Amino acid sequence: MKKRCTGTVSRGVRCPIIREGDDLAQIVADSVLNASRCEEFDLHDRDVIAITESIVARAQGNYASVEDIATDIRAKFGDKTVGVIFPILSRNRFAICLRGIAKGAKKVVLMLSYPSDEVGNELVDIDRIEQAGVNPYSDVLTEQDFRAKFGASVHPFTGVDYIRYYGDLVRECGTEVEIIFANHPQDILRYTDAVLCCDIHTRQHTKKVLREHGAAVVYGLDDILTASVNGSGYHEKYGLLGSNKATEDRIKLFPHPCEEMLYAIQQRILAETGKKVEVMVYGDGAFKDPQGKIWELADPIVSPSHTDGLAGTPNELKLKYLADNDFANLQGEALKQAISDKIRAKGQNLKGQMASEGTTPRQLTDLIGSLCDLTSGSGDKGTPVVLVQGYFDNYTVE
Image 1 (cartoon, rainbow, N blue to C red):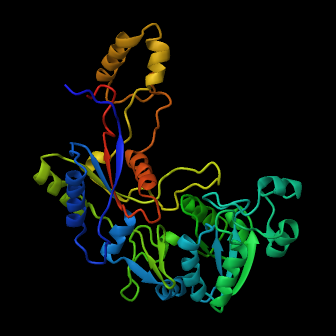
Image 2: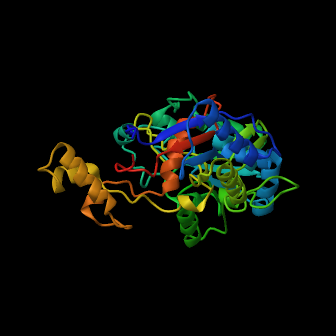
Image 3: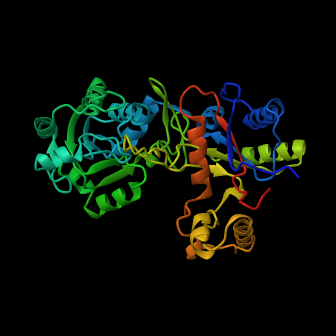
């Protein structure tokens, strides 16, 4: 029997450019099947076909305009000054949303967290804050205060001064803007009692704190465009969260739930190959860049839709723990056999056992989605579908 020498393999799969209304189930299945023929590899049970959320939303036609956002902002906030708090610093993710917010408001008080935003984009280095005698846990700074203490704030990757960029963007919409820097949600209530929370993963806590401190109107980005406005796209659960810039005046929203499409792909592959694969949609991966300090996950969730076989978390033993502890006196084939026997005998729930300590206790979809995001990239690779093979195999599988 041929000996297996590799474990998990992740392949980017090239597809046609997807347009609104395309039959994505057929395109994805055909692209994976064609890749397997051209590259001469076989499909197996529990292989994972992952589809980037971008082409799913595009096929669904889930788009909205800046004016659609403005209409919903006016409906929810009326003539009140809108406190826009804790946005991330992103031209792709937030700037176009801010344009819609500004068009729907008469005045915006923009409150930026510091020294960095929620996902790690830095406004100022923490060492400079300490040197300036500023306490980010208590001090509220005006834009004038911030500039006097720290000067320009240029993002190291994009070269953008987001303070100036966001301020100018609001003013270009004919809307008054005031920018402050603070880290407690309730600090915005010194300026207005109507607040739009723009944080992603901490949004529910932020809303709770604001309500407890007497805010009159509290919404989050996940509450904007939760229903169609004048025929626009929308997202029933996440609203504007997970959206991306499509054009200068149009956004692509997070895709609607699409399990039916995923199971159609699964059935198509089963009919063609006899193998039952798993299928998922993925967005941003959940990982952090140690150099830029940026946490990648700007989407509200890594995988908005997946087949049932991808639910749950890994159930794995730590091989190095077994080698260093349980079988420290073994070598060579005896060690291999002992570890293999231990893996075969493992239970269905290893939680709390020392032999599983150090394994990653994350959702399978978060782990696989992160792998897929790194594989497909965000540029011009042209592989919006990723095939992951061998992810569920272990040391005993030949």
